[in-house]
Image 1 (spheres, rainbow, N blue to C red):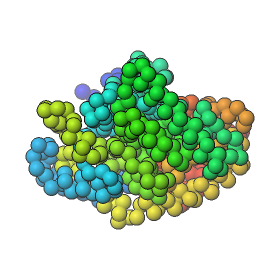
Image 2 (image 1 turned 45 degrees about the vertical axis):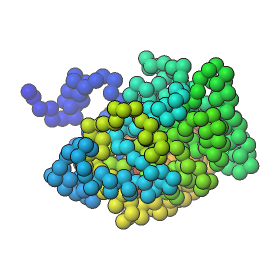
Image 3 (image 1 turned 180 degrees about the vertical axis):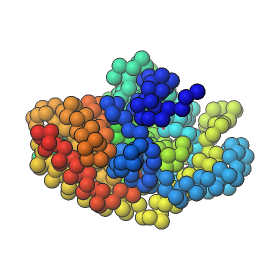
Image 4 (image 1 turned 135 degrees about the vertical axis):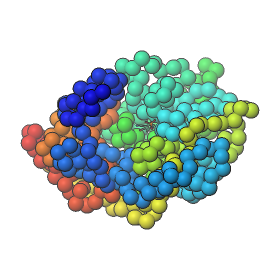
Length: 447
Ligand code: PMP
């Protein structure tokens, strides 16, 4: 066996022995990470990059508190959830303290597993079978969650939309079915109107499904659509949707896999952001909760989990293992000790000002959307049609990385949304550096 050393050798080896369709960042010039620390990555030449991509390493790459929490437990015991562990219950209690109205946790290992389990819980509880999903949504890579992800099944994969999945338009007032003109994008009354139009779409889907003898087990959505285009649904949308869904015996599941744990700043969970009293029936979570250690969870009510799986019970080999729970406890401790919600909120307020200034200077930025440390720039070719500027997004992120040392990503159904979702330790100086990098890259690219 030869041990590859250079980046080129590693890439060739990877091409040889790793699944050819496994995604890679910057495929024209992938990044070899030789070290990661807080909001920075270092390549094989020790070049430092500001990381605006890694929302999973939520409190900072290799944060010492999380590292010691994980390693101490790793050296103590790794037994599965069928043994009694104080770390498991402590972790569940701390998570439940952030979710009033919920009383039960089931730990799993990935966002996909959490959403798959949410579907099973909903079906077992409601005795209905179908799911309503939001257009462009992504809920995971396992078969059922791919079936619930228009982000995948609408884009050339072999999994098709099954008859039990119904797609409601994404509540996107910028480029969705029910749009607002630029001058009304932040107008409360206009947004309230759109909210009703979008939630009525869900009502009509339920009525149509029932007319053909089908029942809705769950409506699932992110509180703020991430992969699907950085979309903030208008205030009131989830309240209205929940009313329609519950009136017909279904449950409301909020996927907080990307948006939870203080990313939105003002609140621990994105669905709490509007302070309108909306409480989902099930919340799924993942990515940030382990700071890179694989752990995720489904949080709901005892009345729902009690109905799961008949007599066979639930078991998941790694779900809720004490090492995973220790990672979560480490993350929660850092969030508390470093006041990361407050920090994320403050950074969000500065981002809003700076990115809107950037928009005023570069008409190619059609819309600026975000909160806390979660932002998107919608690049457009034309102000009236809002046609997505796909090629520019790819050029911009490559230039920012190669020439300016800032790591950005792009996403959305057209891959034209520039995304910023850095670890929460990202500071004001980092923020100005990022905005300046985008400004310079757009200017040099002729925009
Ligand atoms: N839900 C959302 C909103 C996600 O963004 C993702 C991952 N991108 C998932 C679910 C799936 O999570 P995982 O990759 O951990 O299975």
